[in-house]
Length: 171
Ligand code: FES
Image 1 (cartoon, rainbow, N blue to C red):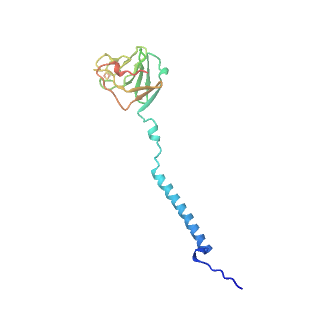
Image 2 (image 1 turned 30 degrees about the horizontal axis):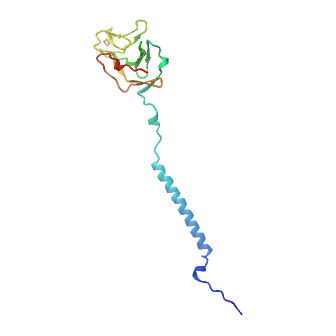
Image 3 (image 1 turned 90 degrees about the vertical axis):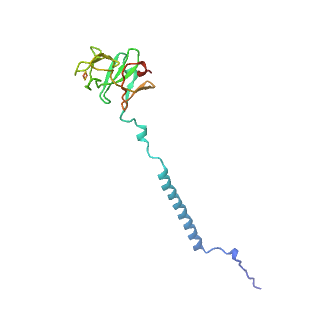
């Protein structure tokens, strides 16, 4: 007696070669999808933020408040201003440009005043006029004091006609 085994279509194993090709295609598909995602994420990633985190050229960190003694005037070549620490502890960043005709005004530490070499205008340590012909106080730049550190914004120059307390920065 002989037995016959019949196979239905559902029982048939796919030929090994076809199955291998399917696996290869699936594998290549996964790699292609991965590469695509990597390229897209490269476009969407934000750029480096160095320009945002670094201080701009015009924003000058002058130093710690405690490093400027009461009653002192310190010249800053970069930014072209004087940092004046007033008798009451307040701080002013004073432009070195004379308000008469624009000469550079040096600080005279013995006289305790700014004396213009061009026409002898004199200013006190807050930049207020002591002697004409200068018509108004020396200009100032905005000052901020955060965590004891003084920063001067030289991109802004404030023209003032009189000296008043609102111009002075305090810790
Ligand atoms: S430019 Fe300073 S007094 Fe004339």
